[in-house]
Length: 183
Image 1 (cartoon, rainbow, N blue to C red):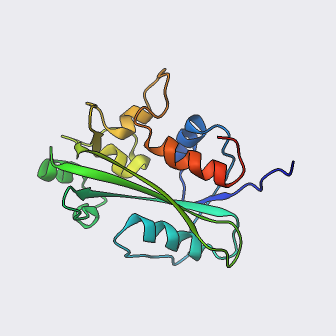
Image 2 (cartoon, one colour):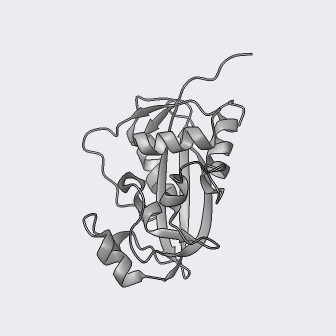
């Protein structure tokens, strides 16, 4: 059986890579940065993830992740967050019911159709940011049925389940299978 090529995780962080390796050990990948000058103002995570793999035109296979929080009515909160001010964001939106949208885009080869994998999870805005800073929105989102942020749950020491909510396991499990890795 032919071994799948190792894809590059575009704009992934070491912290996110470690989390994914715990959640889907079969998924093999390496980290890669975005091309210099890349920028997107796409409002939805599917388009942002898509644009990232398109921007990495000489890299394949590759995948990218994009996340957004929306109100239950569908309004994105992405533009409400100042990268330096998660505390103020939580103070203003504390307890607001929201959906976290996760989308991963995969490009297998130059010119190939881009595949999208996505999931969403309902919850609320945290009272204050909690968890490792590189986890972004996960630090501000408390999934329904939990009292800690998604970032705290992902980093829980000694936890039996590295993905108790199942959000990234679902999306990255699908990605691993699509790439020919046994998830």
